[in-house]
Image 1 (tube, rainbow, N blue to C red):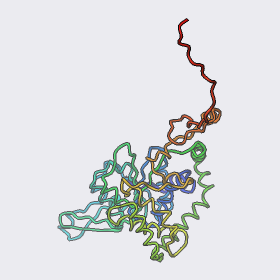
Image 2: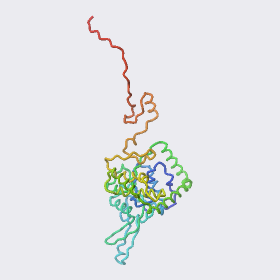
Image 3: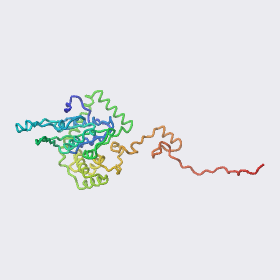
Image 4: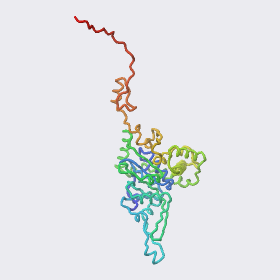
Length: 360
């Protein structure tokens, strides 16, 4: 499938996305440094995965959004070589594939976990190197393929093999909308876009232009950003605590922190940059027996999905009133919705009379 025609239909603005700060952060880091190795987004349907990816493409230099269908072959992805022309005329005739089309743009892979492992491996190689190499029967060709790779998956439909999962640079786990107010904001925003896409895009044009300019400046500044020794220590400590295998997490975290510093207009990475990006680099590499850190309340997307605290529903007003009316407190400690037991003091009772067992 070819790249989507630019400006044929207004694209949902990246700056208008609601309720997914971790996803937006990961995608912006990838826009600044496409060689991070791609972003893998895991989450249920309807959580703005494809919308965010399409919106990011508008911020990239080429503005291209290339979709990779599930039935794609290796030749369609890499491109093909005309071997007959190479043998007869000693020249390589190359027919570009999807990787060439996505150069300086975004390559989107929906349900990446359903692709053959060989294709996923190839995608990750190109994403990390920025070069597509084709070899057919002793004839070789290569070209630049500096692209932002975004893969999505629904955990209900299977997982990637661990060795492929580890090769994705950043990972975002999306949860369902956490509360009714956030849901209402998201729905209102989407309805406003659907009612008049042109007007909606025009309202966000200034913010989009500013963000696009910041991305361009950050890309130009990236190579000049340095890491102080304290940042290396911080990254090593975080990866050691997470008990990750190998040093890929360290390398990705350092590069992501550099991209974040470049976005902030700085030429040296700070500890705050590492803190911002750490979970994106560790979420899919952390040892299963190591508990992830509790995320701050304003950033619910980075909290682990298997955390009971995150999945615990808020008590309703009626339940809270009922608990308070009975002198107890609403459940928050695993009492299954019942009020916690109350402490009752020792109370005096009437003196008991002995039972008269004497027969009349």
